[in-house]
Amino acid sequence: MNSRREFLQKISGSAIALSLLPGAASAACTSLPGESYDGPVLKVAIMGLGGYGSRVAEAMVSCKKAKLVGLISGTPSKIKTWQARYNIPDKNCYNYENFDNIKDNPDIDAVYVITPNALHHDEVIRVARAGKHAICEKPMAISVKEGEEMIEACKKSQC
Image (cartoon, rainbow, N blue to C red; front, side, top):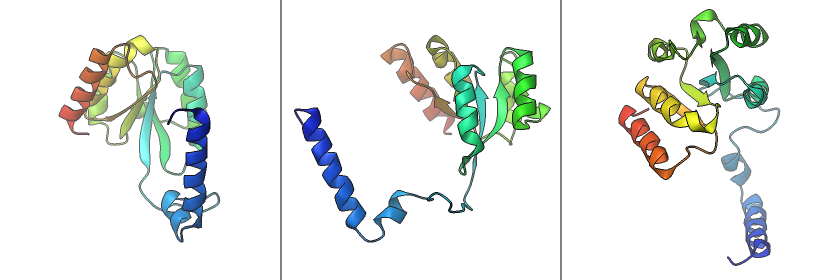
């Protein structure tokens, strides 16, 4: 594709064609607005309780397939505030010193890393070593080498 216009034309055509296929909407959307969901729920801890972390947490309140169940922060007062707001138990709250203990917590499936970009590399590798899935805010890393190391750590942990 040579232009944005060409891209938009092709993607629009695909969307229209998909909507005409029988059953395509139900295949493309696992749950529609107002529809209940009975499948598994991803239990997520947020690492980094700043402004964007707040937006993610608020979005997760109404999410049917993921639930905020844990917190990781270097600021104890933020943890207390968030615990009260999102009903997070003490056993699911960590700081950066005791974070590696998350490996023994079956209540948490994944850690969403929402910290400054330069910290993503080390934190994602810690998440992987703890045997948890890592969700990393963009940009993933500050170099290709760091990104590759993060991917390798996650592959090794097989989460």
